[in-house]
Image 1 (cartoon, rainbow, N blue to C red):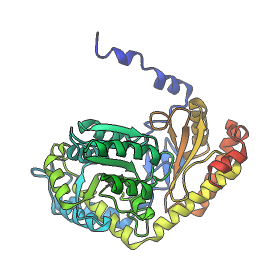
Image 2: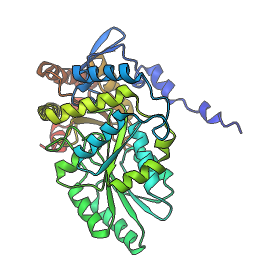
Image 3: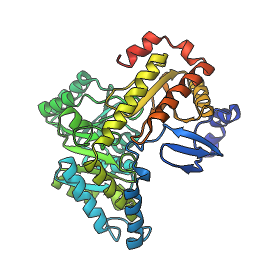
Image 4: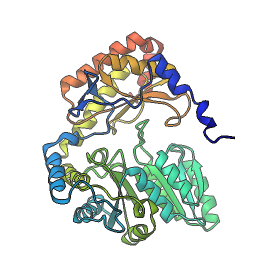
Amino acid sequence: MDIFQKCDGFSRARELQALGIYPYFIPLHGSEGTEVEIAGKRLIMIGSNNYLGLTHHPKVREAAQQAIQQYGTSCSGSRFLNGTLELHEELERRLATFMGQEAALCFSTGFQTNLGAISSICGKDDIVLCDRENHASIIDGCRLSFADVRKWKHNDVADLEGHLHRGKAQKRGMLVVVDGLYSMMGDLAPLKEIRALCDRYGARLMVDEAHAVGVLGKTGRGAAEHCGIHPDLVMGTFSKSFASLGGFIAGPAKVIHFMRHHARALIFSASITPSMAAAALASLDLIEQKPEMRIRVLALADRVRRGLAEMGFQTAGTPASPIVPVIVGDQERMLRLWRTLYECGLFTNAVTQPAVPPGQDLIRTSFIASHTDAQIEQVLERFAEAGRRSGILQATPPDSASHLAGR
């Protein structure tokens, strides 16, 4: 049998392309942060993780340009060998302090951070307890670890406790891994309850703060700070609020030291480019100095969430999130709504399985602190138009939508 034979049977993407409702790999011709240009058409961007709007901030751009002048465009090697810059070490020191941890370690992407951190610290004699809706990078990090991976029902602390009880009885090391803020549904992990269970059963807690750091918490540390708990390990990315590319893990100094010498995703990958490290540092400065950015983005997202629910859309998530999912359920109906929104001038994300469970196909929208009030009004107006044109609004009972929105 030819190993390529499976490719012949993969036809779904081409079928959607033929229908004109294929929503992926769309090239942008230009971007101003809150608006993008695609094939001569301007759209309001509500499908970006640029939550604080820092990708186009003058200080971030200037820092990236200065780093290129000093260090060039690439380190051309791994952190382990020739690819460590003073910028990397400064960024790690700053992140450790910001996150309230002893030490931090930067990886080239957020995906690699979870791969490297989980697979290096968890071995064949350990148990990893993984929420079923964790990000793919967490799932893959668990697979690479050789640990006994046990998935528990999403945000179900009773199910988690059952696994913890059995793990403690077996006298095995345990790591509980969760997303602080889930990137598709926009819901928070019940971190207070999870922290209490970890303490009771002797497990360590790792929180992925990719979508929460910079946005949630009194100082922007993320969902853990928002919920008033302290994780043993905390992971974050630079590709969202930090307007850059890369990721980090922060925790006890001895653990970070171990990961520096055992995380294959770090040792065998080229390091973050100078410009990206400098951009992340400049973004961290702004996150610390301008708390009004996270206040605004959460207010804008909640305004849209309430507005869409009032129209009759089925929304989900929490007010403490810049992410506003609109649940459609059926894949083709969701894709047709995406296409109608696109025609109305909105760039959104079409999300289907495996990113969400079957029957939860949704339009993911996310908001940026630099969106103007006028743009938000246009977002609501265009959603209303797209909902009418696609028939979604008539098919969604307003009472159900309001209930799911938490109103």
